Image (tube, rainbow, N blue to C red; front, side):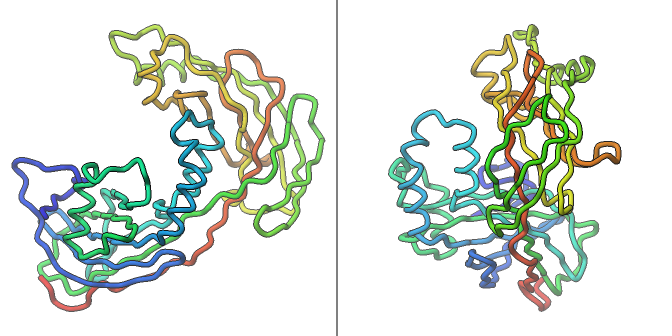
Length: 338
């Protein structure tokens, strides 16, 4: 199996030289994930590590039984988000590679999944996945996520004495019950319950304003999306801003008030084009703006999706962000290997 630097599983540059294989076999367990690192690949540009993570078949089956009917139809935004959260092949951790004690710049990560449980996947569609199974000796009756991470040297080492990997968990989101906030809600307090811990918070609305997105900003965004065949796109620019504070206070990155309303799609955009375009949020349905942070020192700020008409009120998702797993360091190999 040839691996090329800064190229994903599907890339096969005609002139590039394949990276050099270094066989390793480092097993690991990280939270709910267990698997092994079968190989490293090196070149003059950098290093790549492959990860084979086994996903319990019962977890894959439960996900398929719950969601496959809806996935065959048209998904609403809430279901699409929840499917992304529950996807058993989603790897909720990042990877940093260090060689000889020097942390390297990450340049590319990619992943593919293999399972025989999904009824809509045919063997002919999984040639690459089957190649990975055979290459690394993975059980074909199991479910697997194959992940590749590449990093660039600042300066290629003469000898590789140690390859080290840091695994760090991403923060997960937990949504509380929706609340409605509008122009007449200034001073109103809502009780918000953390859906995981049960702890209760008071969310107080400090200010609500109807806003118009700057036309020059919209124009700059539009320039990157238009082509010669479609220059008449009109984007929504009306939104509602809500300044608020929490009691007890928690860190800014641990809570966000997320717009739950469905904004307006741009006018004049063909359906095929809209499906693959992101303006500020997503053009395949609503157009949205998204911000969490300080409002000029006055507290937190939340913004709705974009609309063509002024927004009087909107539904909101109170979302708590939580990191469930501590970081973990793996020494993949600690001997002269190159």
